[in-house]
Amino acid sequence: MKTLLADDHPLMREGVRQVLAQLEPAVEIIDAHDYPSLFAQTAAHTDLDLALVDLNMPGLVGLQGISQFRHRFPDIPLVVLSASESPHDIRSALEAGALGYIPKASSTDTMLDALRQVLAGDIYVPDCLNAADAASSPPPAELTAAILDGLTGRQREVARLLGHGFTNKAIGSMLGLTENTVKVHVAAIFRALGVSNRTEAVITMQRLSQS
Image 1: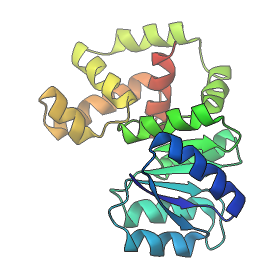
Image 2: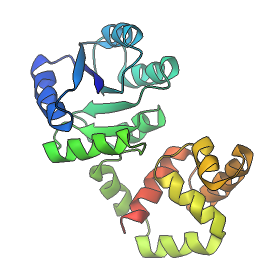
Image 3: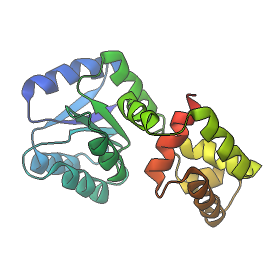
Image 4: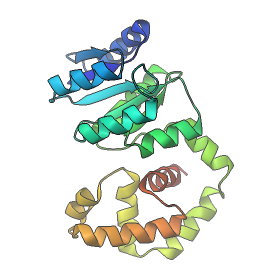
């Protein structure tokens, strides 16, 4: 597995290297210390399997850096590592295209689990965001009942796959549907969930799956 590790603190990079060795003993790690070196290294290593990126590094405002990375390298999974556990920062990073957000205070087991989820094609949402959402949302049982009442059987299947982070194209392939048909179902799911974008829908569906 070939991974790009971008963080402006050498000690942090060394600690993450040790975690990655537990994920894959033969992991090859490419270092970057700011956004310019992140872009340069990624351009030089287009066969990366994963990019782990500190949200706040020299060179760009964090979310601008994440957005630019996803625009320039859309096929490389990007996971944010950050000291911030702010729900706003987490949602913003996911909306900018990150496939996961790992607070730096997380345990080794949590980080490994998060990376395995992303490498398996899912989106990782940290528990601190789920907890913040739960505090301001209806109880899961009530929310689940409301959603099930408003969705068809096919829409429930789409919602389940949506909650695992699959794209419309991937969902269509799995269910034998055209991408346009999936888009129609996704729009109906957004209405049922009371959300306005894919990230909010994924976060909500993942919370429901854990209830």
